[in-house]
Length: 429
Image (tube, rainbow, N blue to C red; front, side, top):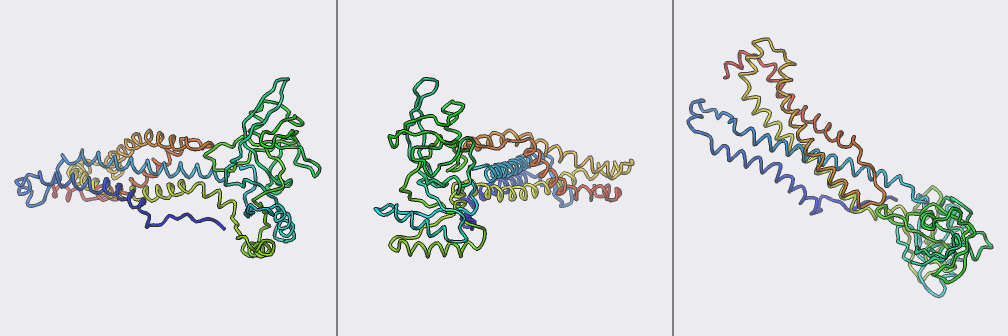
């Protein structure tokens, strides 16, 4: 049951961004061309028998605009590749638990919530489609909002550590499929044991925390550490996991249910039916953990889709400008091409001569785009605690895509000019 983000073509942000790109890439070059056309000398047009000759003064401005357009295209392509690379990291980063086929069910706070928890858990465990049931206060996708202080001794020195407290059921780590780095999970006889995460162990600065006696400030009780787990990432990877302590608590307001693969709708329907039997006066509130976690990246998902559309639009518009400019330049060099062919120049030599300039523009645009994109991507990645590397191939890929599209755009014009009869070219001039 994957979550679909609300990102439609009716989104005003999308059309606003498209309008900005269209304004720069289309209107500005058109206005510049109109300005130059207004400066065309009428006598020159008459001497050319009514054919408006392309002015060489137009070329530098048109070149500059084309280079800027190509640079924008490279920036957007690199941005899309970089964002997708970061998303690949987010999707494959270990979260400290298995998010697949995992759902949460709200257990409303009331006087009978403990009794309701035990009864509903027993009923759920009877379902063949359910592989495990546990409980917590803070399911993945929600913050660990209970702060506490842990007091302990190390090397004969009294210390304290501020961390998050997570009340859980005894089988929490088994259902969540969380890996233990040291020690073990809670045993049925444990009442004064706690489990800490790896971040907590690092902040404690001890080699072996097992059986270290601590005082848990949240409950003001003495405990012993029985195990260390890998960090469970409750929120998005924009935030580092917090030092956390996990302890047993009978009153839990969130069920964590691990489902077996199969018909999810049928399973959810069965769970809702059981809920109404156990608690007919409270609503059945279920959510899938993978959807809750994905909701943390709504803004990033929209940014990725927006940049993808913008980059495609920018490439299309910039290539239109490049196509028109190549026609203008080749038209001005018709006589030169004819003379070179009369003197024995081959088609490949003419193609190389014509495409060399366009290749230079792409290289110039690449040089402009790389530092700008690197800075923007670096700033964006700083919003994540866990970030991908800005690999060199990301920038090269953006440049190569634009280069190939640009060569395909201008090569047709270059080929026509290179294969044209030189006599016709000289007669044209």
